[in-house]
Image 1 (cartoon, rainbow, N blue to C red):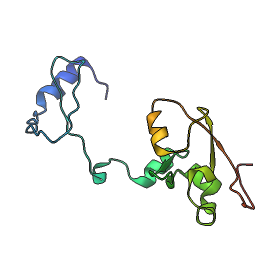
Image 2: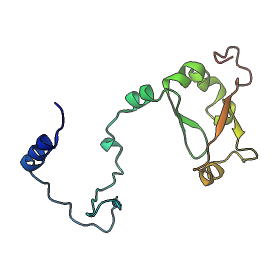
Image 3: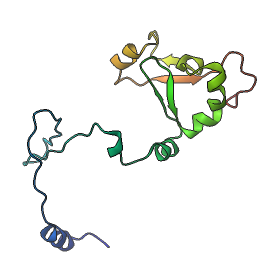
Length: 138
């Protein structure tokens, strides 16, 4: 159905408002500065609260990867999995085995250095793992 002003008013008037959560000093709060009223919502720290499963996320974002603090790959999207997923057991999981950091130039490959540049776009280039007999990205 189309949302018209009349329909919106009916839906808003019929909906019962939820009571606000009790304040808690130990929780993070998201506030909206653009509205006149403050909307707050608790941030979750539980993986179970994620609305999308890992398999769905990997299908939705096929060209993503997740690394841990040692820069070992811990998750791959289906696109990267097709390219070098079969090499992970043989050649290791370190990011430098599969990617060259092209930009920004001169960045030391460490978690801390990447984190310092979290607002900087990175350009990575795929590379064939040393000793790999086949590499579909070539």
